[in-house]
Image 1 (cartoon, rainbow, N blue to C red):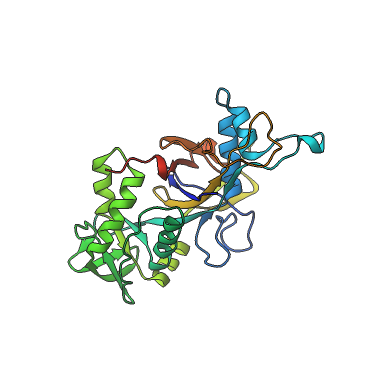
Image 2: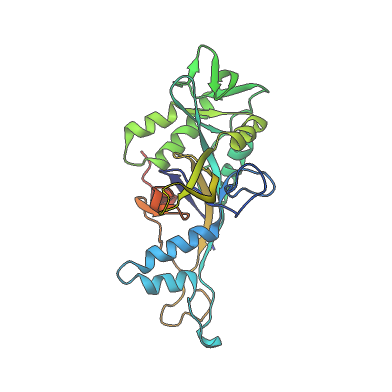
Length: 297
């Protein structure tokens, strides 16, 4: 199976959680065990994509092939789906900046992992920027976040220098995210920064969005007893990536082994999905982009 890359772009705060926690945050977001960086479980995305396909005309059979049957009454009806989908890892984290309002931050560790997955997916290789020194950062050559020679993110004051090799990555990511909007591509390239791994990890812990949630008692009009909680969200404008692989099956005989063929691709560059359980309060809206369908400028 040929691995391919997909991207998730959050259009609203996103909460894909792991259940309750014992700390200050009652409902934290899902994080990778080893790195503690935010992520979106592949199982969550699989369920949402399957539901989307099943709601489309003639999409139920495609969903069955990609994900397997929902209900199985005998072993003859049982077979594995053809779509293997990895978790989505954080690529760009939007951070509040003193100059330019917003900065899209990444780190050498994250960019190296992304570059490796791009190579695995058969995409062109790009030269990686040299890692910034401690307490410093690298920005694109036309950065709007610089304040003199400083980059001020949240309460961090970092010395910053432009790096043309970061321009290449910014333009590539911007073309992936906004294949048809030149103005938006320019805005992203002006706001991308490469931070040291430790600083990026710190911001990924402290610069996520924390919201207070309550439930109102309909009889008293006040907060229900015990119905006050803190919920963590991945900020809007975050960008994540993951890998998927797909081998097509004969839809008339789905029990047979996958055949080497071009598989139907469920990913639409303009596809909007709702992830998580907070659609009623206007959260969890994401764009799902398949890189092979993106037209680079």
